[in-house]
Image (cartoon, rainbow over all chains, first blue to last red; front, side, top):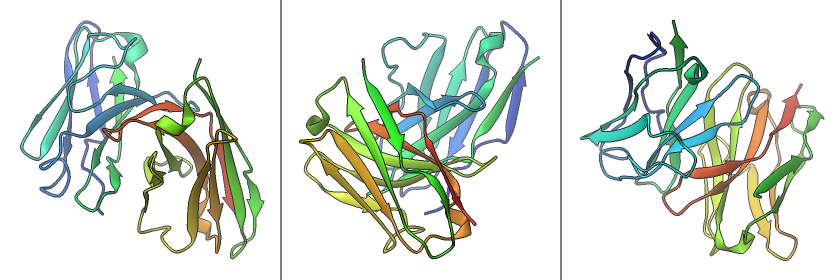
Length: 110
Length: 116
């Protein structure tokens, strides 16, 4: 199972919006709405930010939103803040009943 | 509150074995899927295995036949038996509570496994 494709890095200024893409195949993102997004600070465990493509767990800011079109899912962060600087990973369930992660995207807040 | 605490990591030689444990508290363990996810030094997340509440199990191809996941609801614990370890298995191993949409919504602090 190949990893989902994410840009290695994205950046934005405080207050701006950024979008991180996550491209899979018809065997994962294209078939299931079981796409999740995670935030990870250096040396820390990941934190779930989005599940089932667009749902936010309790406690996650509404500045974070998710969507999907075809084989590509996206995470949008609006009103960018310094604390959003972190690594972000997407994941998806697959037709082989496994889970696959993206390679990760480093978000820099300028 | 939900707590997941991994243990059992350490230094092991190639070809050796190690058993990781994850002690869960703060939720009804038997109701949830559970996963092991690893992260090699400086690399991204890699899904390793999951076990459903009905004990249905899946593994990544990279560990199939070498690793074995299990759970003990009486002890609220998740395990990962790792055999025939390779240098490329070196990583921090996370235990994660997983929802039915395969979203890992609670994570432990991780335990480091070094194969050298």
